[in-house]
Length: 98
Image 1 (spheres, rainbow, N blue to C red):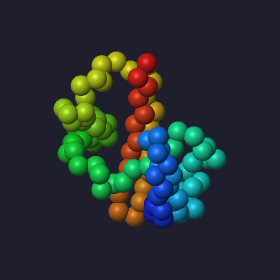
Image 2 (image 1 turned 45 degrees about the vertical axis):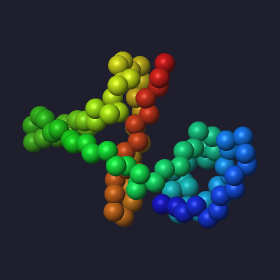
Image 3 (image 1 turned 180 degrees about the vertical axis):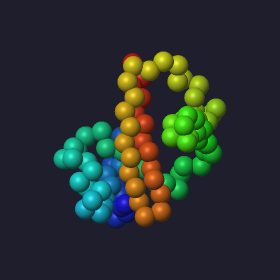
């Protein structure tokens, strides 16, 4: 988890952020410094559900809300990452548009 300490509008649709994150979260980046996205759990307002199937409900299907699935037709590759905080489990799915 982290905090934005300051932000500076640089023009040309760019904003510089100074952030502070927990050491464990910094390790999750595995040294990567490109394609980093900032997000806040407080912005996730769309409701969704999970379907459980199979023996003892071990297979889980995450339902994509209708307002988010218009352009999700076919997928070559989907990658997923899991991050846990004290109060939440955050799952990231990365779908290539090509």
